[in-house]
Length: 91
Image 1 (tube, helix red, strand yellow):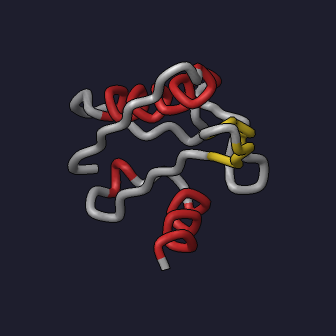
Image 2 (cartoon, one colour):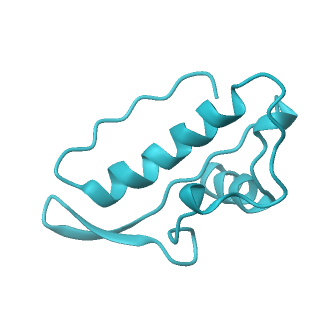
């Protein structure tokens, strides 16, 4: 990830889920930290493309989930699900 900015106000579920993404990057940013075979519970989320969170945006119920992937640095490739989710949305 090169840059990411987000402002989330009055929506703790989105902010907490986004914080997990930053926590993973901080965790993996420590030199010689191995990518775990399974992510520890603090990094897990129940929100994804199949079970998005439901939030109100401008009085409209919206389905939302966060996903990241980086094919440029193998240490930051999270899962095929993240990669294909982003690809599906982008194309």
